[in-house]
Amino acid sequence: MATTTALLVVYFLLAVVVTVESAVSVDEHAHSVRRNTREIGGAPEVEKNPQFWNNMAKTSIQDALRIQKNHKTKVAKNVVLFLGDGMGVVTVTAARILKGQKAGNPGEETVLNMETLPHVALSKTYNIDAQTPEVTATAYLCGVKARWATLGLDGRARNEDCSSSKGREVPSVLAWAEYAGKSTGIVSTARVTHAFTAAAYAHTANRRWEVDSILPPEAIENGCKDISAQLVDDNPGIKVILVGGRRHFHAGTDPEYPTDPGSNGVRSDGRNLAQDWLFGKTSARYVWNGTDFRTINPQTMDYLLGLFEPSHMKYMTDRDGSPSEEPTLAEMTRTAIQILRKNRNGFFLLVQGSRIDHGHHEGKAVKAINEAVAFDDAVEVAKDLLNLDETLIVVTADHAHTVSLGGWDTARGSPIFGKLDPDYVVESVGDKLVPDGKPYTALQYGTGPGYNISALREDITNVNTANPDYVHQSAVPMIRESHVAEDVAIFADGPMAHLFHGVHEQNYIAHVMKYAACLGEYAEDCDREERVASGTARGSFSTAVVLLSIILQLAWV
Image (cartoon, rainbow, N blue to C red; front, top):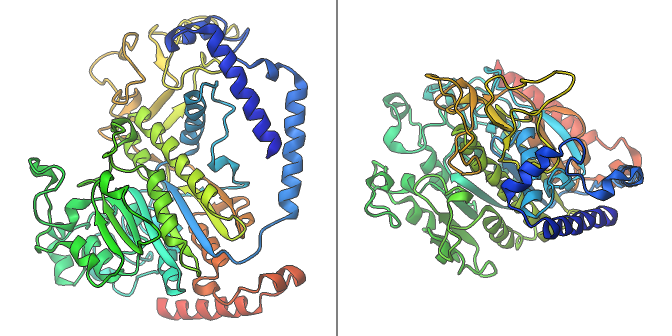
């Protein structure tokens, strides 16, 4: 790690020198890079020396050997799951470059906080009824794959069929953690009732059943409860909830946007769920704005509910940075950890960066990638606050998007949101690589709203492609850009993190978290020292699994 830090310092110093000497604008730098693309390529001087790469590789080998010899096998007191909604590998790469360029470096050499977690694997994201996934939260939170729009239910439950959900409920890691006496929390930039966090506490045949006013007659007749009510009525023990989604908690005027009818509460039962959540709790508080949030003292607070927007929270690029601005994902993560870690039994925390996904769906890569950087900042907070000898941190995604990153004229250090030269020549191909002669961006979408279906491809020569509201070009016209079927990355550190080691089914993530913390069906398999010493101390675990399998088979019949 010391060597890695030293290399990053070298990069920083080189970047400062280059910046001071050039004193050119971003656009001028981009054109300069293009003129010298393959001769200089924007490479820092140190990288031209082969010894730089040899030393880096040798250090990495030593790090890998050290990690292999020192697998952390204690019981995980704490578990933190970071879920980057829609954060495919391309998004991780683009976030890496953006984060580096924000620091004044070329960007490609940057190491994200999530990338410092030493155990890396891939996760297969399909639903049992869909090749390209829609909602996969039941897999990574509950440990079983399910249908594309259900939450907290096994595969026997049918989409939009309330009656089929009865007896099909599956408990989440959060539920098992609470049962074991741990504190629990949810942090998200989305509505708390949004699908990718709701599976932590709710069981529903349709992800859209977020509020009672939209429940269909069949669901009402069969006694299915909306997701918001399930959170408050059925999960009173969740200690920290910092999210968006106010409008699903009441039926009145929104306190922040009183003149906007679209922000008003939409409950039809007249309940104020925020007040209901507070009932019976001590050392508890409800906040809805950044000013009140920043007055919270975690040491004296046991329960905290924050609902910071009527729907999803703001994009980072839309925030003004004022003291009253709603908290960032990193701020919310810090406060959540400071409250939850007071429990000597430990805690489980789910942190979701949801607006990565929303930015991609809108075809707005600038917003999506900036959200990924903010998500990585939250990972840094957890790493700084927690002891990874007793805390398992898992960073992953639910699915990826059709975004791609590339092109011929992508010189080293090219601005990640910049434009590429259509006249760039590759000798082996000849000229006219771009037949229409128009510039293009390195970030593009396979599907989405950025397609000009009625005319030739848009000429973006005079368009500011770094504007957060710029809609990147796409190949196939769609109102909303789509998910993709490709695998996503898993990064992990802490107890049992080495169990992430190859290509896994997505439900495996939940099982590793339960196994590491001795939760659920793995509660009896906690004798880490005996298992490490003998390599065979799995008797109680095996018996429990066999009994559980028999019970499940009988239930299935």
